[in-house]
Image (cartoon, rainbow, N blue to C red; front, top):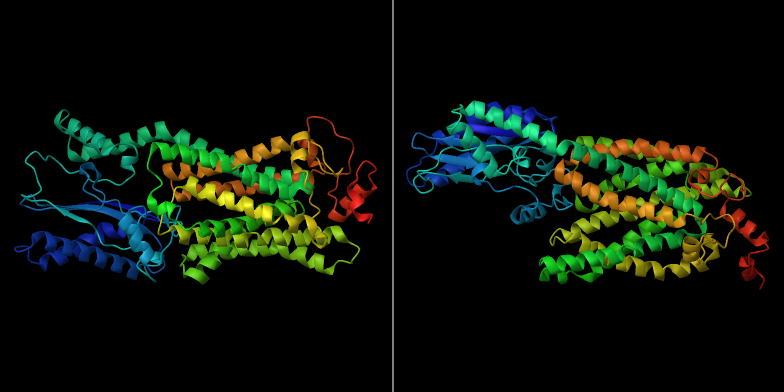
Amino acid sequence: FVAVFDGHGGTRCADFLQHGLLPQLKHHLLHRSFHDAPHESMSTAMQSACRDADKAFLGSHLADDSGSCAVFALIGKDKWVVLSRHGRAVDLCVAHSPQHPDERARILAANGHIVQDRFIFGYLGVSRSFGDRFVKVERPVVITTPDVVSGGSRHLHPGDEFLLLACDGLFEVFTPQEAVDFVAHHRSVNQMTPQAICDLLVHTAIENGSQDNTLLVLGAVAALMLADVGERFTFKLMVDRMESYRYFLAQITTFLYIPPMFCIVGYKATQTDFIDEEVNEFPKYKFFIMAVLDLCHAMLLFIPGGNTPPALTVIFMQATIPFSMLFGYLFHDYQYSRMQVVGCILMSSGLLLGILPLVLLSCSLASDVFEEAEMGWNSLCFLLAAVPGALSMLYKEQALAPQPMDVYYLNAWVAVYQFIGGLLLAPVIFDIPTLHLDQRISGLECLVNGVSEVRTDKCHLGVVVLVTFLACKVGLFYGIGFVLNHTSVGVLYTAFTLAFPIGFFALDAYQSSGQPDDNVSCVKEPHTDAITLSAAEKEAVSLLDESSDSGLRYMA
């Protein structure tokens, strides 16, 4: 009996299997006959052994959430070989992941949900494993049933020399054929023992992986953190400097996605048949629902964003996480681990500590103090942007789960509907004065020519800030994919966790600097007060400006 146990979320499950799986296997082998249907009997024995070993671990480790994958082989006296799970060297395994069509169908039938087409509940990248309590106790989203491949006279060839079992970490460096060639060379030429070959193979994989990938991955993680911080900073800088054009900024950022997305879709369509008939038949009204939710999310970020304290924008952007967990539990009966629940409670507590003082201050202020009240209510709206954001994420997961779709094709159509929805929203933004939004329609002139209808807006360098913001968003999009492909979800979460305090302190310094715009000015501007004017004060300044005709609409 030979086995490899590849643990995740801790070592206890893998340690338990090291001593707990073989006794279960022996027990079930001794109670079965192999004369009439040897393969079926062996498969049943292996499956029963895995099931009982998993139950034993879950029953004896009630407070542990770790799990483990496994690949193991049983070699009998008659050269019978039984292989389960990841026998990569001879391609005997089936990859048990949410990307496999059969595994996906089983997960969805068990009321599980798949994030980014590869992670169960946004966490687990395998669909069969030992342990992993939180995806088994309530419902069998992840199962322990192994795939069994048996040898014997029907399957074995006289030229078969050895069987190589390894976890997926080895094959991130070696291809199966390269690993087999490595073993064969040192076995025949250098006459090394199997244990020595295994030690050398692992050592070589670690060395090659370190030389080839470590610096690249570290650079990608650093770039991802920089893009995350840059997106937060440039967003706040943009909505502060062009306060009268926040609606325009929300629309232009959506519109600029449409041409490149459709160009990518068109190019991929000429190279591969990636848009099949089922994707074309995907109901377009679902794109519209996604777009409406994304539009509400964007408007609640852009328009109130300028009146929200800079440091709090970093905190409030995290609100999507607890809201998505709450809606997932209420609407889809999603289950979460103990650590996820604790993290959600801590995050929600931080959000309440951030918003309650502002709201209470707004409610207790005298009627003539407008700026602080405006800041409080705008901050609340900015926080509530997480509600449509979370609903959008959950709706996309549910709508796309039965029909996976190319991300560029999806984003292209959602951007089109979102932009159209934003145009339909324009009368509400511009023509209802009781909302005190004070948005102007000449955003393109502000962005391109640096000319604003309102003196307090700073339109110069607007294109630079907007392009930097979009570049950071694109960097985030590709950075997340690269980090997930080359590392793990844990590394991605760690990168965002480290970026959070960096972004917070950067925006806190921006808030404390008094005249933050001077930090990005290439040409000295005329003197302006180092305060953020409220909407009412800003309108008053505009009306008193002799060079502006924006007050003419009040003359009637």
